[in-house]
Image 1 (cartoon, rainbow, N blue to C red):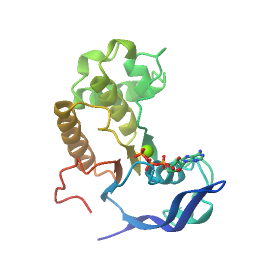
Image 2 (image 1 turned 120 degrees about the vertical axis):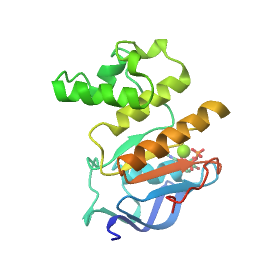
Image 3 (image 1 turned 45 degrees about the vertical axis):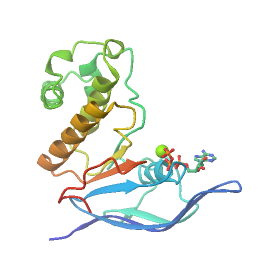
Image 4 (image 1 turned 180 degrees about the vertical axis):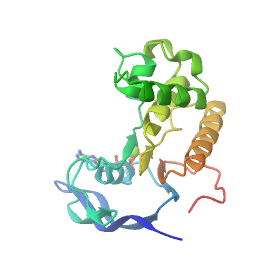
Length: 197
Ligand SMILES: Nc1ncnc2c1ncn2[C@@H]1O[C@H](COP(=O)(O)OP(=O)(O)OP(=O)(O)O)[C@@H](O)[C@H]1O
Ligand SMILES: [Mg+2]
């Protein structure tokens, strides 16, 4: 059964004289994997930021589960273009935000294993490669299975080989966890599989 999770109705975003996003309309159903492809400067990040509640639309309305987004959207999780790991925390603490409860730590370790970095929990981010940091950022975004996962060009900064691997990981993990996902990409570097809409 198709069940609506997010609706974007006639949304625009204007900064001063500049239209960052003109009239977006989109409905995302539960368990969809939506790829937003577009030119640089086309307003993709702006749209994700509005879904995450980090910006307000200038006009129009965004609703998740029938509720207009107002302030930070706690029912969503964003992975930004850069990894934004906290350098003073270990990898594991970056996932748990320093929460040492047993279930959090276990979940973090399971996710680190899922992104093939099981041995890196005690490392600090400065000791990781760019691709490893991206995988940690992905693992962090998956903590507690967010109802809506927003990925802003998670493949952008990676070399071709790492990008393929990261793409597989994203597909495997979002599919096995049945996560509703919006993935933003500047180029159509994504292989459109049957689960894309
Ligand atoms: N805070 C802001 N103030 C003014 N203009 C902004 C602001 N944020 C974005 N813009 C403008 O809005 C437009 C859309 O920007 P946005 O970052 O959403 O594009 P994008 O599609 O994510 O591009 P890219 O693929 O390069 O990441 C750009 O022209 C940008 O300059
Ligand atoms: Mg962007």
